Length: 389
Image 1: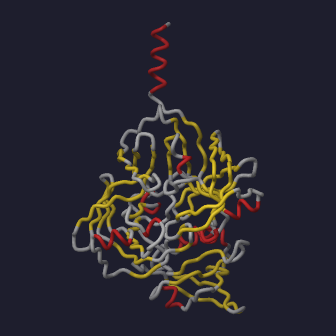
Image 2: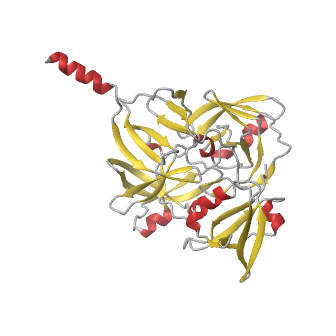
Image 3: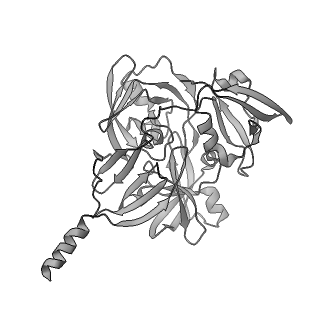
């Protein structure tokens, strides 16, 4: 009998116990899951290794009567903002309950508008510290594993995670090969909440004298505190965990405030790179496991229209042009900031389709007819997409 029990214990130790398996919405390279706060109906929350705390959107809190009992300040990617603090909340999904104290209530308006639909908040460190969090971008699902029984799948590459002093966000080591062949090592925050793939801080680019002559001015970065500004261009290669990604796009931040404005980090490794892998994150053992997926061979690209699109307001009824990149397909076609986008190729569009629209505009040499409204007048603007960087 004893032998049978020992064999059973040995057999069960070979398999990781799933605590929860939940569907995900991959939006703008970010992973969102539905989360209930206390007894309120679920809302979409970003699963974010770049967040030191789990936070709730101010608009979500106001709509549900969640009140601040204190005040504080939160540091975003490029700015700091004044926030309220809720004394205690419980976040739940599937069979997982995450209690949190002094929960920040943060303005996420710009993020909501860019997403095209309300985001209830951000699941930060509290969601990662007790589980191995398994992000399957290809299947659009997240599995939370029991950390004690988890074993990396066969063929996965294990990468050490480094936790510095700055808000305990995980960091990984990479090598950047610049145009001309110079190789620069970097330690980047592994940031599932960042849509772009590679963002470098102002301090890091100055320290290593990184000059990218073909860079263009953009405002593609977005976080707490609003949109950021940066110079965007391709580098020769990114080497990460033994994987080589050719000609990735790097964003060189101009920020002097917030996370990207300090000298404590080199930059962020975000969703445009991470979505090419099956990613399993283990804070307890300070490691992540990577297996490349079907997305791996896709070229790293950004929008080829050259217009940042967002919901006009929090009614989420209309799409507007929020900003433009100079000398892009959008500016050459005559689009202007503030134009309302009503239809594409004769089909009406809504803010909830923004992610699909952006994917459409990431294909080069595609001709589209955009129906826009400007100063109360409707017009059709033909445009042909092309690579900007």
